[in-house]
Length: 233
Image 1: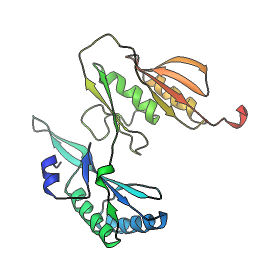
Image 2: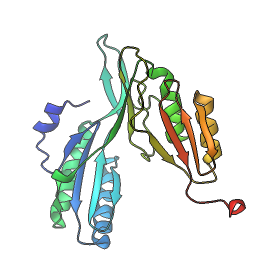
Image 3: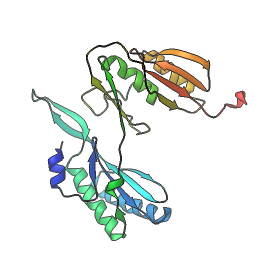
């Protein structure tokens, strides 16, 4: 694991560390220019044996670099393998910036944003399986790449959800909830996975369009579909 100070000292003007990874955004002229950029990045990644996560539209390419084999040493000296920035990310980030310069692409680090979800609870271990199942369809995402109970989807479909430890307290009225939108043909499986992990169904009166569930602390989420199955048409 590299510290924030070590990452800053690397002098990566195009990149910023947000959360656990290095992020960059490069402005492109059009989709073809983005594809050309990504192709060159792919070649660099093959040479390095490491690849970034990529998202692209017609105006920008967003990149994230993170290593799955970073080593964290706890206070007792025990080593844990976690997801974090390592030297291989620094090296590839530098090479990607060189490729961008070669292709006359400009970085836009000021527009980079990463979103994580945080849930205050005194029962993180009990809530994590529910939210892992709600957000990803199974419990494998719980604790993935971390020494805690964070929910981190391997395919990055949803933001990271982590649990902020609090003292036990009466559950307050929930001011927001998460809508989990899934294909119509997996909604039943997603609901069943959440219930098996400890969720309860609060309201199924609008199923299959929307089903409201709650975790053991009473925090609610909706699983919804917006496309009917052939049988429902």
